[in-house]
Image 1 (spheres, rainbow, N blue to C red):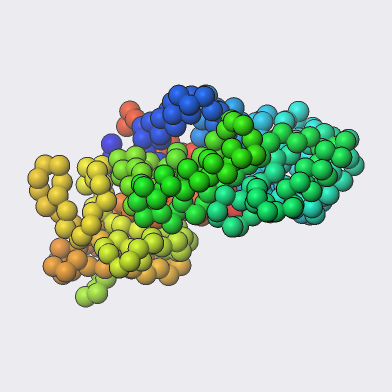
Image 2: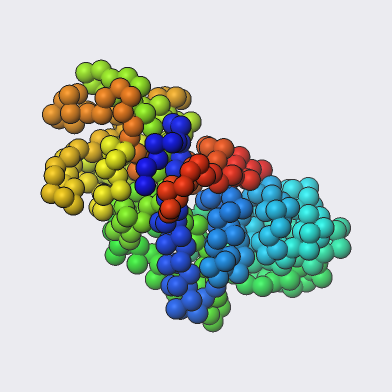
Length: 371
């Protein structure tokens, strides 16, 4: 379906791919008898949160207190805040909102300070707060280790000694999987995470995926997904061209500064891959060179976004030169490196509908909710 009605630069979501991704993850979770509590920080929208719940998810996960309040106020009744809150007033505001709207609110903790803040805030607001202890499974960002870390027992004792807190489990995040170079590396990281978690608790009950609804170059390059599963792209227009680059109207305010990790191969150390708009739907695998083959057998070109300024993207010409690049006024589709920050940079998502109807948009309710 055409996106010619979309004004550029625009963040575009393919409705059919989005629904397929949601359904597939739910099917996998159900097959293994685990519940889904997907991260809303990726899509930041009521519409997509409702889609994942309709598919069978048991609640949503958010990343900051303000984002939690946005989803509480929007009517979502089971929310986990997967972030260490150590400022009591932030938590006071969120607990009050949960009480007002009758929301089940769960919080992760990983420090003595965090537990004390949670206990104090819950007590002051006459609320019993569900807490999960964040376990470090190798990412070394936040969390306690399950072996040789006295904090785990200390946190359990503090929580169990507080009448305003209820320990409901443990939680993990293997974020280092984003640096994996292959499916095998992802599987190894996942297995280590599984083993660590099972040392503390007998069963794994919930999964908290987020990026799965949109996907991007990260899972594609790691070999755990394909371009045909990527539902979020950026559509841009060529506004200038010179001997070195063609320039698009999507810069750092649209694409974010995340680069693809790599060792110098095509597509690494760039801000996204650029395709002619009318050809993107035919892309099945990420090209490994400027030149690639369409399913029809025709040869065509892919390009790298090599530099960004605020309002401009600098796209390198292929070795064949400027004449083979999209020209001024042409529209292109960008396969982005990381969908989450891209969504946070826009006001709404333009929807490429299954039936071709337009315009359709998805509004965002927690864009910029970083507090």
